[in-house]
Length: 222
Ligand code: HEC
Image (cartoon, rainbow, N blue to C red; front, side):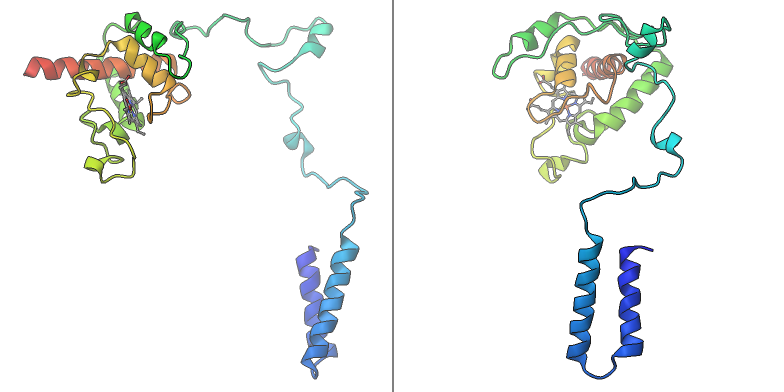
């Protein structure tokens, strides 16, 4: 029985059986009983651990991949351990070797212009996927037409405090090398957050190729 139910029952008992006359008396008795119950139930000494329903679910007994398995290694058992430093998953894009600038510095931001997009072109399927990723992650600010006027901005009426760049018409961004876009999308730029935790390297390069293709198409249409 929980504490709440216990108190409720006492209250009901008092109300029905003992006291029907003096409301002040009734109140003070209820108060005294409540306080006694609270005080007697609060006690720093824990005598028993709380019971756990299905402890195997609360505390996994299984060996997890990529955890510390030094106890197994000691016994000569080699279970999936942490990957060797410097290795990468099969099929992943090569790491971006340019680190984030210290605040106020722009050296690496400009150095990133030289980094080539490892993805040369997008197949129809890849383009659909890149568009999907763009619409989920970027469109809310930069707009589905890449014009910097997504629902969060709405010509300045939206809740976002800073104008997202018009990826097609902005004089700087429309000719921005893909490596530099990758830098900004990976580490963030002013009020735009970093997307490294939402999109993996390959997905970021795909989205950037998608943006670059749209920029080139807009220039060609002029
Ligand atoms: C929450 C709103 C928001 C989202 C979502 C967002 N951006 Fe931005 N983006 C901005 C703002 C604001 C700027 C202007 C930053 C500045 O220079 O002050 C910007 C700038 C940029 C720039 C120019 C960067 C530079 O170096 O000048 C690029 C490229 C860009 N965004 C691409 C993307 C891509 C690709 C995505 C999706 C992965 C994305 N953005 C998602 C708000 C957003």
